Image (cartoon, rainbow, N blue to C red; front, side):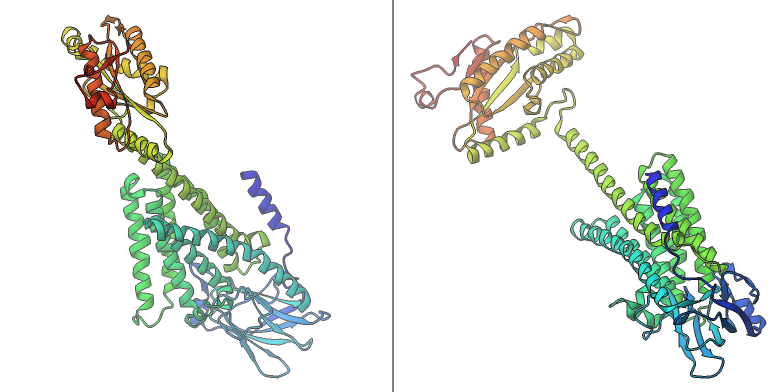
Length: 560
Protein backbone atom coordinates (compact mmCIF):
# COMPACT_ATOMS: atom_id res chain seq x y z
CA UNK A 1 0.00 0.00 0.00
CA UNK A 2 2.81 2.43 0.91
CA UNK A 3 4.64 1.79 -2.37
CA UNK A 4 1.47 2.45 -4.34
CA UNK A 5 0.89 5.81 -2.68
CA UNK A 6 4.48 6.85 -3.24
CA UNK A 7 3.93 6.05 -6.93
CA UNK A 8 0.83 8.26 -7.01
CA UNK A 9 2.69 11.11 -5.33
CA UNK A 10 5.52 10.76 -7.84
CA UNK A 11 2.99 10.89 -10.69
CA UNK A 12 1.43 14.07 -9.26
CA UNK A 13 4.87 15.62 -8.92
CA UNK A 14 5.48 15.07 -12.64
CA UNK A 15 2.21 16.67 -13.77
CA UNK A 16 2.41 19.88 -15.80
CA UNK A 17 2.40 22.91 -13.55
CA UNK A 18 0.17 24.98 -15.84
CA UNK A 19 2.10 27.98 -17.11
CA UNK A 20 5.26 29.94 -16.61
CA UNK A 21 4.31 31.03 -13.10
CA UNK A 22 5.73 34.53 -13.11
CA UNK A 23 8.54 34.16 -15.66
CA UNK A 24 6.67 36.52 -17.99
CA UNK A 25 6.67 39.46 -15.58
CA UNK A 26 9.57 41.90 -15.75
CA UNK A 27 8.92 43.47 -12.38
CA UNK A 28 6.26 44.52 -9.87
CA UNK A 29 6.31 47.85 -8.06
CA UNK A 30 4.17 48.95 -5.15
CA UNK A 31 2.57 52.25 -6.11
CA UNK A 32 0.95 53.10 -2.78
CA UNK A 33 2.34 52.12 0.63
CA UNK A 34 -0.03 50.46 3.05
CA UNK A 35 -1.24 52.16 6.17
CA UNK A 36 -0.12 50.57 9.45
CA UNK A 37 -3.58 49.17 10.17
CA UNK A 38 -3.69 47.62 6.67
CA UNK A 39 -0.29 46.04 7.17
CA UNK A 40 -1.42 44.56 10.45
CA UNK A 41 -4.45 43.06 8.73
CA UNK A 42 -2.45 41.23 6.08
CA UNK A 43 -2.45 37.74 7.53
CA UNK A 44 -3.60 34.29 6.48
CA UNK A 45 -5.32 33.03 9.58
CA UNK A 46 -2.56 32.41 12.10
CA UNK A 47 0.17 32.87 9.49
CA UNK A 48 1.69 36.32 9.07
CA UNK A 49 1.96 37.56 5.50
CA UNK A 50 5.51 38.05 4.28
CA UNK A 51 6.75 41.48 3.26
CA UNK A 52 6.93 42.12 -0.48
CA UNK A 53 9.54 43.75 -2.65
CA UNK A 54 9.74 44.39 -6.38
CA UNK A 55 13.00 42.52 -6.74
CA UNK A 56 11.55 39.07 -6.07
CA UNK A 57 12.79 36.58 -8.62
CA UNK A 58 10.84 33.54 -9.94
CA UNK A 59 7.44 33.54 -8.27
CA UNK A 60 5.81 36.99 -8.23
CA UNK A 61 3.39 37.84 -5.42
CA UNK A 62 1.19 40.80 -4.53
CA UNK A 63 -0.75 41.60 -1.39
CA UNK A 64 -3.31 44.14 -0.29
CA UNK A 65 -2.59 47.53 -1.79
CA UNK A 66 -1.87 49.03 -5.20
CA UNK A 67 0.76 47.66 -7.58
CA UNK A 68 2.12 48.21 -11.05
CA UNK A 69 2.86 45.05 -13.01
CA UNK A 70 5.23 45.13 -16.00
CA UNK A 71 4.56 42.14 -18.31
CA UNK A 72 7.47 40.73 -20.27
CA UNK A 73 7.10 41.27 -24.02
CA UNK A 74 6.55 38.52 -26.55
CA UNK A 75 3.72 36.53 -24.88
CA UNK A 76 1.06 35.40 -27.37
CA UNK A 77 -2.46 36.41 -26.33
CA UNK A 78 -1.32 37.38 -22.83
CA UNK A 79 -3.57 37.07 -19.78
CA UNK A 80 -2.80 38.29 -16.27
CA UNK A 81 -3.58 35.51 -13.77
CA UNK A 82 -3.92 35.77 -9.98
CA UNK A 83 -3.74 32.22 -8.63
CA UNK A 84 -5.90 30.99 -5.71
CA UNK A 85 -7.47 34.36 -4.88
CA UNK A 86 -9.59 33.04 -1.97
CA UNK A 87 -11.22 36.16 -0.45
CA UNK A 88 -9.21 38.71 -2.44
CA UNK A 89 -10.83 41.31 -4.72
CA UNK A 90 -8.61 42.34 -7.62
CA UNK A 91 -9.04 45.39 -9.83
CA UNK A 92 -6.93 45.69 -13.00
CA UNK A 93 -6.58 48.78 -15.24
CA UNK A 94 -4.19 49.52 -18.06
CA UNK A 95 -1.67 52.16 -17.01
CA UNK A 96 -2.38 54.06 -20.20
CA UNK A 97 -6.07 54.34 -19.29
CA UNK A 98 -9.26 52.46 -19.91
CA UNK A 99 -12.06 51.05 -17.82
CA UNK A 100 -11.02 49.20 -14.65
CA UNK A 101 -12.00 45.52 -14.42
CA UNK A 102 -12.78 44.02 -11.02
CA UNK A 103 -13.03 40.34 -10.16
CA UNK A 104 -13.19 37.98 -7.20
CA UNK A 105 -13.94 34.28 -7.18
CA UNK A 106 -17.49 34.96 -5.93
CA UNK A 107 -18.34 37.01 -9.07
CA UNK A 108 -21.11 35.41 -11.16
CA UNK A 109 -19.78 36.84 -14.44
CA UNK A 110 -16.27 35.31 -14.51
CA UNK A 111 -15.17 33.92 -17.87
CA UNK A 112 -16.77 30.43 -17.97
CA UNK A 113 -14.01 28.95 -20.11
CA UNK A 114 -11.67 29.00 -17.10
CA UNK A 115 -11.94 27.36 -13.70
CA UNK A 116 -11.95 29.52 -10.60
CA UNK A 117 -8.54 28.55 -9.31
CA UNK A 118 -7.39 31.91 -10.67
CA UNK A 119 -8.70 35.34 -11.69
CA UNK A 120 -7.94 35.84 -15.38
CA UNK A 121 -7.62 39.30 -17.00
CA UNK A 122 -6.89 39.47 -20.76
CA UNK A 123 -4.20 42.03 -21.64
CA UNK A 124 -4.51 44.18 -24.74
CA UNK A 125 -1.00 45.62 -24.89
CA UNK A 126 2.58 45.27 -23.72
CA UNK A 127 2.45 48.23 -21.35
CA UNK A 128 2.25 48.04 -17.55
CA UNK A 129 -1.05 47.52 -15.74
CA UNK A 130 -2.18 48.90 -12.43
CA UNK A 131 -3.45 46.37 -9.91
CA UNK A 132 -5.39 46.96 -6.71
CA UNK A 133 -5.79 44.09 -4.24
CA UNK A 134 -8.30 44.19 -1.39
CA UNK A 135 -9.37 41.63 1.21
CA UNK A 136 -6.45 39.24 0.59
CA UNK A 137 -5.57 37.04 3.57
CA UNK A 138 -2.37 35.78 2.02
CA UNK A 139 -0.09 36.86 -0.85
CA UNK A 140 -1.44 36.23 -4.34
CA UNK A 141 0.81 34.60 -6.89
CA UNK A 142 0.56 36.54 -10.15
CA UNK A 143 1.74 35.54 -13.62
CA UNK A 144 1.36 36.55 -17.24
CA UNK A 145 0.42 33.49 -19.31
CA UNK A 146 -0.35 32.73 -22.92
CA UNK A 147 -4.14 32.31 -23.11
CA UNK A 148 -4.06 29.03 -25.12
CA UNK A 149 -1.40 27.53 -22.82
CA UNK A 150 -3.27 28.61 -19.69
CA UNK A 151 -6.57 27.22 -21.03
CA UNK A 152 -4.90 23.85 -21.72
CA UNK A 153 -3.34 23.74 -18.25
CA UNK A 154 -6.62 24.80 -16.69
CA UNK A 155 -8.48 21.99 -18.48
CA UNK A 156 -5.89 19.55 -17.14
CA UNK A 157 -6.54 20.98 -13.68
CA UNK A 158 -10.28 20.34 -14.00
CA UNK A 159 -9.68 16.79 -15.24
CA UNK A 160 -7.57 16.06 -12.19
CA UNK A 161 -9.90 17.57 -9.61
CA UNK A 162 -13.27 16.30 -10.86
CA UNK A 163 -12.59 12.54 -10.39
CA UNK A 164 -11.59 13.16 -6.76
CA UNK A 165 -14.76 15.18 -6.20
CA UNK A 166 -16.80 12.42 -7.83
CA UNK A 167 -15.28 9.77 -5.57
CA UNK A 168 -16.10 11.70 -2.40
CA UNK A 169 -19.64 12.49 -3.55
CA UNK A 170 -20.28 8.92 -4.71
CA UNK A 171 -19.05 7.23 -1.54
CA UNK A 172 -20.82 9.78 0.66
CA UNK A 173 -24.14 9.30 -1.13
CA UNK A 174 -23.89 5.52 -0.79
CA UNK A 175 -23.24 5.84 2.95
CA UNK A 176 -26.10 8.36 3.15
CA UNK A 177 -28.41 5.72 1.68
CA UNK A 178 -27.21 3.29 4.35
CA UNK A 179 -28.13 5.88 6.96
CA UNK A 180 -31.57 6.37 5.40
CA UNK A 181 -32.21 2.62 5.63
CA UNK A 182 -30.48 1.76 8.91
CA UNK A 183 -30.88 5.07 10.79
CA UNK A 184 -27.51 4.54 12.45
CA UNK A 185 -25.99 7.84 13.55
CA UNK A 186 -22.43 7.14 12.41
CA UNK A 187 -23.50 6.80 8.76
CA UNK A 188 -25.24 10.18 8.82
CA UNK A 189 -22.22 11.80 10.48
CA UNK A 190 -19.90 10.27 7.88
CA UNK A 191 -21.95 11.55 4.94
CA UNK A 192 -22.35 15.01 6.48
CA UNK A 193 -18.68 15.34 7.45
CA UNK A 194 -17.36 14.23 4.06
CA UNK A 195 -19.79 16.35 2.05
CA UNK A 196 -19.18 19.51 4.09
CA UNK A 197 -15.41 18.90 4.01
CA UNK A 198 -15.69 18.63 0.23
CA UNK A 199 -17.88 21.74 0.10
CA UNK A 200 -15.26 23.65 2.11
CA UNK A 201 -12.50 22.55 -0.27
CA UNK A 202 -14.58 23.45 -3.34
CA UNK A 203 -15.45 26.87 -1.89
CA UNK A 204 -11.78 27.50 -1.04
CA UNK A 205 -10.80 26.58 -4.59
CA UNK A 206 -13.74 28.63 -5.93
CA UNK A 207 -15.14 25.72 -7.94
CA UNK A 208 -18.36 25.53 -5.89
CA UNK A 209 -19.53 28.91 -7.23
CA UNK A 210 -19.52 27.63 -10.82
CA UNK A 211 -21.69 24.57 -10.08
CA UNK A 212 -25.46 24.68 -10.54
CA UNK A 213 -27.17 24.70 -7.18
CA UNK A 214 -24.02 25.78 -5.33
CA UNK A 215 -23.52 29.11 -7.11
CA UNK A 216 -25.99 30.67 -4.64
CA UNK A 217 -23.30 30.29 -1.96
CA UNK A 218 -21.35 33.10 -3.63
CA UNK A 219 -23.65 35.68 -2.05
CA UNK A 220 -22.29 34.76 1.39
CA UNK A 221 -18.71 35.42 0.30
CA UNK A 222 -15.95 34.48 2.71
CA UNK A 223 -18.43 33.80 5.52
CA UNK A 224 -19.83 30.90 3.49
CA UNK A 225 -16.34 29.37 3.31
CA UNK A 226 -15.80 29.85 7.04
CA UNK A 227 -19.18 28.37 7.86
CA UNK A 228 -18.70 25.20 5.78
CA UNK A 229 -15.19 24.67 7.16
CA UNK A 230 -16.23 25.09 10.79
CA UNK A 231 -19.32 22.90 10.39
CA UNK A 232 -17.15 20.23 8.75
CA UNK A 233 -14.84 20.34 11.80
CA UNK A 234 -17.79 19.89 14.19
CA UNK A 235 -19.15 16.94 12.18
CA UNK A 236 -15.72 15.34 11.95
CA UNK A 237 -15.26 15.49 15.73
CA UNK A 238 -18.67 13.88 16.27
CA UNK A 239 -17.80 11.27 13.64
CA UNK A 240 -14.48 10.39 15.30
CA UNK A 241 -16.18 10.05 18.69
CA UNK A 242 -18.74 7.56 17.35
CA UNK A 243 -16.65 5.91 14.66
CA UNK A 244 -13.75 4.98 16.95
CA UNK A 245 -15.76 4.60 20.17
CA UNK A 246 -13.64 7.27 21.87
CA UNK A 247 -16.20 7.98 24.61
CA UNK A 248 -15.75 4.44 25.90
CA UNK A 249 -12.01 3.99 25.29
CA UNK A 250 -10.68 7.47 26.23
CA UNK A 251 -13.51 9.22 28.10
CA UNK A 252 -11.51 12.19 29.45
CA UNK A 253 -9.74 13.00 26.20
CA UNK A 254 -13.01 12.48 24.32
CA UNK A 255 -14.70 15.03 26.60
CA UNK A 256 -11.90 17.56 25.94
CA UNK A 257 -12.13 16.87 22.23
CA UNK A 258 -15.90 17.43 22.30
CA UNK A 259 -15.51 20.57 24.41
CA UNK A 260 -13.12 22.24 21.96
CA UNK A 261 -14.21 20.73 18.66
CA UNK A 262 -17.97 20.72 19.12
CA UNK A 263 -18.89 23.33 21.70
CA UNK A 264 -16.03 25.71 20.86
CA UNK A 265 -16.49 25.57 17.08
CA UNK A 266 -20.27 25.52 17.54
CA UNK A 267 -20.16 28.74 19.55
CA UNK A 268 -18.07 30.47 16.87
CA UNK A 269 -20.60 29.34 14.26
CA UNK A 270 -23.43 30.85 16.29
CA UNK A 271 -21.53 34.14 16.56
CA UNK A 272 -20.75 34.01 12.84
CA UNK A 273 -24.43 33.67 11.95
CA UNK A 274 -25.68 36.16 14.53
CA UNK A 275 -25.87 39.90 13.82
CA UNK A 276 -23.60 40.58 16.78
CA UNK A 277 -20.76 41.31 16.55
CA UNK A 278 -21.18 43.00 13.18
CA UNK A 279 -17.46 42.86 12.37
CA UNK A 280 -16.53 39.24 11.54
CA UNK A 281 -12.84 39.90 10.90
CA UNK A 282 -11.98 38.02 14.10
CA UNK A 283 -13.49 34.76 12.87
CA UNK A 284 -10.64 33.31 10.74
CA UNK A 285 -8.08 33.69 13.51
CA UNK A 286 -10.34 32.14 16.15
CA UNK A 287 -11.55 29.40 13.79
CA UNK A 288 -8.00 28.51 12.74
CA UNK A 289 -6.87 28.39 16.37
CA UNK A 290 -9.77 26.08 17.26
CA UNK A 291 -9.09 24.00 14.16
CA UNK A 292 -5.44 23.47 15.12
CA UNK A 293 -6.26 22.77 18.76
CA UNK A 294 -9.08 20.38 17.86
CA UNK A 295 -6.90 18.39 15.50
CA UNK A 296 -4.05 18.23 18.00
CA UNK A 297 -6.39 16.88 20.69
CA UNK A 298 -8.01 14.51 18.21
CA UNK A 299 -4.66 13.08 17.13
CA UNK A 300 -3.60 12.45 20.72
CA UNK A 301 -6.99 10.90 21.56
CA UNK A 302 -6.97 8.63 18.51
CA UNK A 303 -3.40 7.48 19.17
CA UNK A 304 -4.24 6.65 22.79
CA UNK A 305 -7.37 4.78 21.65
CA UNK A 306 -5.31 2.88 19.09
CA UNK A 307 -2.74 2.03 21.77
CA UNK A 308 -5.58 0.64 23.89
CA UNK A 309 -6.68 -1.70 21.11
CA UNK A 310 -9.38 0.31 19.31
CA UNK A 311 -8.87 -0.80 15.71
CA UNK A 312 -11.19 1.80 14.21
CA UNK A 313 -9.04 4.58 15.69
CA UNK A 314 -6.29 3.28 13.39
CA UNK A 315 -8.64 3.62 10.40
CA UNK A 316 -9.22 7.27 11.31
CA UNK A 317 -5.50 7.97 11.71
CA UNK A 318 -4.65 6.31 8.40
CA UNK A 319 -7.46 8.15 6.62
CA UNK A 320 -7.28 11.61 8.15
CA UNK A 321 -3.62 12.35 8.91
CA UNK A 322 -2.51 12.52 5.23
CA UNK A 323 -5.35 14.93 4.40
CA UNK A 324 -4.52 17.05 7.44
CA UNK A 325 -0.83 17.18 6.50
CA UNK A 326 -1.56 18.17 2.90
CA UNK A 327 -4.06 20.83 3.99
CA UNK A 328 -1.68 22.41 6.51
CA UNK A 329 1.25 22.25 4.12
CA UNK A 330 -0.79 23.91 1.38
CA UNK A 331 -1.90 26.67 3.79
CA UNK A 332 1.72 27.29 4.83
CA UNK A 333 2.87 27.54 1.21
CA UNK A 334 0.10 29.94 0.25
CA UNK A 335 0.59 32.06 3.36
CA UNK A 336 4.12 32.75 2.19
CA UNK A 337 3.06 33.49 -1.38
CA UNK A 338 4.94 30.42 -2.59
CA UNK A 339 3.96 28.23 -5.48
CA UNK A 340 2.16 24.98 -4.63
CA UNK A 341 3.64 22.19 -6.72
CA UNK A 342 1.12 20.01 -8.60
CA UNK A 343 1.51 17.10 -6.17
CA UNK A 344 0.54 19.44 -3.32
CA UNK A 345 -2.19 21.35 -5.13
CA UNK A 346 -3.93 18.18 -6.35
CA UNK A 347 -2.93 16.13 -3.35
CA UNK A 348 -5.55 17.85 -1.18
CA UNK A 349 -8.66 16.74 -3.15
CA UNK A 350 -7.19 13.31 -3.81
CA UNK A 351 -6.26 12.86 -0.15
CA UNK A 352 -9.85 13.79 0.68
CA UNK A 353 -11.00 11.05 -1.71
CA UNK A 354 -8.54 8.69 -0.03
CA UNK A 355 -10.02 9.64 3.34
CA UNK A 356 -13.55 8.93 2.13
CA UNK A 357 -12.61 5.50 0.76
CA UNK A 358 -10.59 4.39 3.81
CA UNK A 359 -13.30 5.53 6.22
CA UNK A 360 -15.91 3.69 4.14
CA UNK A 361 -13.78 0.55 4.40
CA UNK A 362 -13.59 1.18 8.12
CA UNK A 363 -17.39 1.44 8.26
CA UNK A 364 -17.63 -1.91 6.49
CA UNK A 365 -15.17 -3.42 8.99
CA UNK A 366 -17.14 -1.82 11.80
CA UNK A 367 -20.34 -3.38 10.47
CA UNK A 368 -18.58 -6.75 10.19
CA UNK A 369 -17.37 -6.45 13.79
CA UNK A 370 -20.88 -5.67 15.01
CA UNK A 371 -22.25 -8.59 13.01
CA UNK A 372 -19.71 -10.94 14.58
CA UNK A 373 -20.60 -9.65 18.02
CA UNK A 374 -24.29 -10.10 17.23
CA UNK A 375 -23.73 -13.62 15.91
CA UNK A 376 -21.65 -14.44 18.99
CA UNK A 377 -24.36 -13.11 21.30
CA UNK A 378 -27.00 -15.00 19.35
CA UNK A 379 -24.96 -18.19 19.51
CA UNK A 380 -24.54 -17.82 23.27
CA UNK A 381 -28.27 -17.18 23.61
CA UNK A 382 -29.09 -20.32 21.59
CA UNK A 383 -26.57 -22.64 23.24
CA UNK A 384 -26.86 -24.73 26.34
CA UNK A 385 -24.30 -23.47 28.83
CA UNK A 386 -23.19 -26.94 29.99
CA UNK A 387 -22.99 -28.99 26.81
CA UNK A 388 -22.68 -26.34 24.10
CA UNK A 389 -25.48 -27.82 21.98
CA UNK A 390 -28.66 -25.92 21.14
CA UNK A 391 -30.97 -25.13 24.05
CA UNK A 392 -34.68 -25.95 24.08
CA UNK A 393 -35.85 -22.74 22.39
CA UNK A 394 -33.21 -22.95 19.64
CA UNK A 395 -33.79 -26.61 18.79
CA UNK A 396 -37.55 -26.09 18.70
CA UNK A 397 -36.95 -23.16 16.32
CA UNK A 398 -34.82 -25.39 14.07
CA UNK A 399 -37.48 -28.09 14.14
CA UNK A 400 -40.14 -25.53 13.26
CA UNK A 401 -38.13 -24.49 10.18
CA UNK A 402 -37.67 -28.15 9.23
CA UNK A 403 -41.45 -28.67 9.37
CA UNK A 404 -42.00 -25.60 7.17
CA UNK A 405 -39.47 -26.97 4.64
CA UNK A 406 -41.27 -30.32 4.76
CA UNK A 407 -44.54 -28.74 3.74
CA UNK A 408 -42.98 -26.56 1.05
CA UNK A 409 -40.44 -28.98 -0.44
CA UNK A 410 -42.05 -32.27 0.61
CA UNK A 411 -38.90 -33.27 2.48
CA UNK A 412 -39.37 -35.92 5.21
CA UNK A 413 -38.46 -34.94 8.76
CA UNK A 414 -37.79 -37.37 11.62
CA UNK A 415 -36.94 -36.82 15.27
CA UNK A 416 -34.98 -38.84 17.83
CA UNK A 417 -35.80 -38.26 21.50
CA UNK A 418 -32.76 -39.36 23.57
CA UNK A 419 -32.97 -39.92 27.33
CA UNK A 420 -30.04 -41.32 29.37
CA UNK A 421 -30.86 -44.40 31.45
CA UNK A 422 -30.50 -44.31 35.23
CA UNK A 423 -28.72 -40.95 35.06
CA UNK A 424 -29.83 -40.01 38.58
CA UNK A 425 -27.81 -42.93 39.92
CA UNK A 426 -24.70 -41.59 38.19
CA UNK A 427 -25.13 -38.24 39.94
CA UNK A 428 -25.87 -39.87 43.29
CA UNK A 429 -22.97 -42.32 43.10
CA UNK A 430 -20.23 -40.24 41.49
CA UNK A 431 -21.33 -36.63 42.03
CA UNK A 432 -22.68 -33.91 39.75
CA UNK A 433 -19.27 -33.14 38.27
CA UNK A 434 -19.08 -36.63 36.77
CA UNK A 435 -22.72 -36.35 35.75
CA UNK A 436 -22.00 -33.12 33.88
CA UNK A 437 -19.00 -34.80 32.23
CA UNK A 438 -21.31 -37.60 31.09
CA UNK A 439 -23.69 -35.11 29.47
CA UNK A 440 -20.81 -33.46 27.63
CA UNK A 441 -19.50 -36.86 26.53
CA UNK A 442 -22.90 -37.87 25.12
CA UNK A 443 -23.26 -34.62 23.13
CA UNK A 444 -19.69 -35.02 21.86
CA UNK A 445 -20.45 -38.55 20.64
CA UNK A 446 -23.60 -37.50 18.80
CA UNK A 447 -22.21 -34.26 17.38
CA UNK A 448 -18.81 -35.55 16.24
CA UNK A 449 -19.55 -39.11 15.20
CA UNK A 450 -22.75 -38.39 13.30
CA UNK A 451 -22.09 -34.77 12.23
CA UNK A 452 -25.48 -33.55 13.41
CA UNK A 453 -24.09 -30.96 15.81
CA UNK A 454 -26.31 -28.11 14.62
CA UNK A 455 -29.43 -30.30 14.85
CA UNK A 456 -28.86 -31.63 18.39
CA UNK A 457 -30.54 -29.88 21.28
CA UNK A 458 -30.88 -30.37 25.01
CA UNK A 459 -34.44 -30.08 26.32
CA UNK A 460 -33.32 -30.19 29.94
CA UNK A 461 -31.76 -32.59 32.44
CA UNK A 462 -30.58 -35.68 30.54
CA UNK A 463 -33.07 -35.30 27.65
CA UNK A 464 -31.91 -34.52 24.10
CA UNK A 465 -33.54 -34.38 20.68
CA UNK A 466 -31.89 -34.91 17.29
CA UNK A 467 -33.62 -33.39 14.23
CA UNK A 468 -33.09 -35.39 11.03
CA UNK A 469 -34.17 -33.48 7.91
CA UNK A 470 -34.65 -35.54 4.73
CA UNK A 471 -34.77 -38.81 6.71
CA UNK A 472 -37.65 -41.33 6.73
CA UNK A 473 -38.67 -43.12 9.94
CA UNK A 474 -36.94 -46.42 9.15
CA UNK A 475 -33.68 -44.60 8.42
CA UNK A 476 -34.07 -42.57 11.61
CA UNK A 477 -34.39 -45.84 13.57
CA UNK A 478 -31.08 -47.05 12.12
CA UNK A 479 -29.45 -43.73 13.03
CA UNK A 480 -30.86 -44.08 16.55
CA UNK A 481 -29.38 -47.59 16.84
CA UNK A 482 -25.96 -46.21 15.86
CA UNK A 483 -26.35 -43.41 18.41
CA UNK A 484 -27.28 -45.88 21.16
CA UNK A 485 -24.33 -48.13 20.26
CA UNK A 486 -21.88 -45.21 20.27
CA UNK A 487 -23.11 -43.98 23.63
CA UNK A 488 -22.91 -47.51 25.06
CA UNK A 489 -19.32 -47.93 23.81
CA UNK A 490 -17.79 -44.45 24.11
CA UNK A 491 -19.46 -43.40 27.36
CA UNK A 492 -18.74 -46.54 29.40
CA UNK A 493 -15.96 -44.61 31.12
CA UNK A 494 -15.95 -40.84 31.54
CA UNK A 495 -13.00 -38.99 33.08
CA UNK A 496 -11.60 -42.34 34.19
CA UNK A 497 -14.79 -43.33 36.02
CA UNK A 498 -16.81 -46.41 35.01
CA UNK A 499 -20.35 -45.05 34.55
CA UNK A 500 -21.71 -47.34 31.77
CA UNK A 501 -24.06 -44.71 30.37
CA UNK A 502 -26.78 -46.00 28.01
CA UNK A 503 -29.73 -44.26 26.32
CA UNK A 504 -33.37 -44.95 25.53
CA UNK A 505 -34.34 -43.44 22.18
CA UNK A 506 -37.75 -42.77 20.67
CA UNK A 507 -38.14 -42.17 16.94
CA UNK A 508 -40.99 -40.30 15.22
CA UNK A 509 -41.63 -38.92 11.72
CA UNK A 510 -43.52 -35.69 10.98
CA UNK A 511 -47.01 -36.03 9.56
CA UNK A 512 -49.26 -33.59 7.76
CA UNK A 513 -50.26 -30.69 10.01
CA UNK A 514 -47.76 -31.64 12.72
CA UNK A 515 -46.61 -28.96 15.15
CA UNK A 516 -43.30 -28.94 16.98
CA UNK A 517 -45.00 -29.90 20.23
CA UNK A 518 -46.96 -32.78 18.62
CA UNK A 519 -43.87 -34.31 16.98
CA UNK A 520 -41.80 -34.04 20.19
CA UNK A 521 -44.69 -35.58 22.18
CA UNK A 522 -44.88 -38.64 19.90
CA UNK A 523 -41.11 -39.14 20.01
CA UNK A 524 -41.28 -38.75 23.81
CA UNK A 525 -43.95 -41.47 24.03
CA UNK A 526 -41.79 -43.80 21.94
CA UNK A 527 -38.82 -43.08 24.23
CA UNK A 528 -40.86 -44.06 27.31
CA UNK A 529 -41.83 -47.26 25.52
CA UNK A 530 -38.08 -47.97 25.11
CA UNK A 531 -37.53 -47.38 28.83
CA UNK A 532 -40.40 -49.70 29.77
CA UNK A 533 -38.81 -52.34 27.57
CA UNK A 534 -35.61 -52.18 29.63
CA UNK A 535 -33.76 -49.20 28.12
CA UNK A 536 -30.65 -49.07 25.92
CA UNK A 537 -32.74 -49.47 22.79
CA UNK A 538 -34.65 -47.61 20.07
CA UNK A 539 -38.43 -47.70 19.70
CA UNK A 540 -40.36 -46.20 16.79
CA UNK A 541 -43.64 -44.39 17.23
CA UNK A 542 -46.94 -46.12 16.66
CA UNK A 543 -48.28 -46.17 13.13
CA UNK A 544 -51.47 -44.06 12.67
CA UNK A 545 -53.65 -47.17 12.25
CA UNK A 546 -52.29 -48.60 15.49
CA UNK A 547 -53.00 -45.35 17.34
CA UNK A 548 -56.60 -45.54 16.13
CA UNK A 549 -57.10 -49.00 17.66
CA UNK A 550 -54.90 -49.36 20.74
CA UNK A 551 -56.29 -52.90 21.42
CA UNK A 552 -54.58 -54.30 18.32
CA UNK A 553 -50.97 -53.37 19.18
CA UNK A 554 -48.74 -52.41 22.11
CA UNK A 555 -47.86 -48.79 22.79
CA UNK A 556 -44.53 -49.06 20.95
CA UNK A 557 -42.76 -51.44 18.62
CA UNK A 558 -39.30 -52.40 19.74
CA UNK A 559 -36.69 -52.73 17.01
CA UNK A 560 -33.70 -53.57 19.15
